[in-house]
Length: 149
Ligand SMILES: [Zn+2]
Image (cartoon, rainbow, N blue to C red; front, side, top):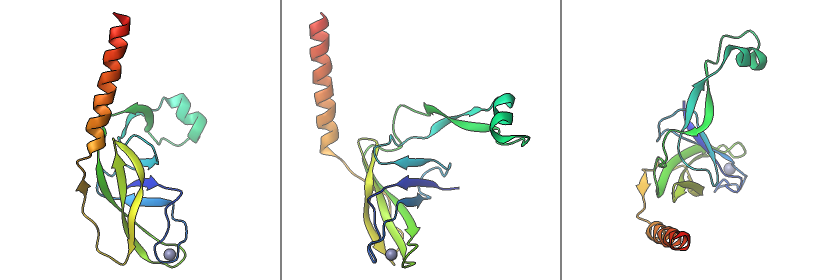
């Protein structure tokens, strides 16, 4: 299995066809898919009750599990960085390599898409905004606490 990122604005660098679906083998390969703005973490699996499975899937004994709304962790898989992704263009058939850019733990967009290049390596960004955002959040919390007191 692979994981995927969806970006409605991404396009083929060769023919400029829209390419929404990008895959990565760089994470845990659990079949998760993230849209722009999504928190980049896997969701917990929960077992499906027999009645619910019958209602949704008829007599099939599978699936045994389904994803829940709960995340595996409060922390994202990475805070700031670029995860290698790939796909092929359905229009011009070019093999494309690119990055899923992650900012503050959320999928921002597909960037640096290129045709006919080697797979890219994961990049971690030491992002100044993270520290700033954290400081602002801390300040806001301090103000809130001050008001309550
Ligand atoms: Zn193309």
